[in-house]
Image (cartoon, helix red, strand yellow):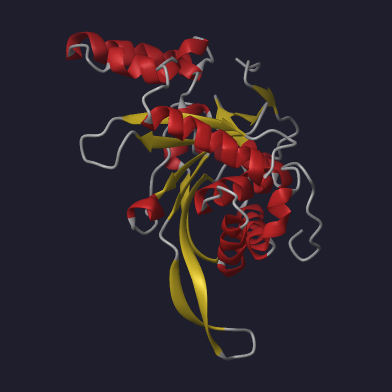
Length: 287
C-alpha cells in the first residue's frame, strides 16, 4: 500500500536511502540515540521573566514549542517509514503521557498536542495546560486509544494476543480504525517525556515498530553546571540533558546534527517562541 490517510508519500528517494530501507526494514533496528547537554540559560531567564509578568509558562511548554518550531524548520524530522516507503505526516503532533497524580499507582493518559502553523508559546501553553488540568481534575472523557487500552488490556491472553497481532497487521497496512489512532502517541510526530518534573535525568528510550512515530525525546532536570566558555573562562550555566532517539532512515546524521544545533539556537533566542511555529528561522551557520 502506497497511499495513506495520515501522510503523503515522499518520492525521489536516492539509492543509498532506499537500500537502507531494504537492509533495515524495521524501525527498532534503525534506532539511533543522541545524548545532548543543552545550554538553557537564556531560556530559564525568559521563563522567569514571563512568570513575573503573570504568564503561566513552564519549561515543558517552552520545550514543546521549541521542538515544534524545529520540526517546521527541519521537515524531514516529520517523516516515517512504512512498508519500505518514506512518508511525511500531514500535520505536526507532539505526544506525551500524563499521570493523573504523582504516585506509583496513578493512572497514565496519552496526550496529543497538535502544533499548528500559527501556534506559539502562548497558545501551546494553553493547549497543554487545558489538557493536563482536565486529566488531573478527572474531567476528561477517555476515548480513542486511551479507552481501547482499558478494554483490550483486560482481555485474557488467549483473546488479547491474537487481537494485538491483528492490530499490528492492520497498522502496517494503514487499516486501523480512527478510534484506535485517536490519542495514540505512536501516531505522532514525536513522543516526549519530561523527566525533569520528577527530578530525573534524561534516559534512553527505544522506538517501536508500531505506529508512525520516528523520534522520541526525554528531557532531564535543569541543573547549574560549570563550563568553559569560548574565551577559555569558567562560567556557571543552566544545563538540561536531552536524550533523543531517531529512526536513522528518515534523514542522515548531518541533518540530525543541524537540527540539534537549531534547537540550541532557539534556546539561546527564546523570543523566537513568540513567533508562529512555522516561521522560518534564517541562521546561515546552521544550514
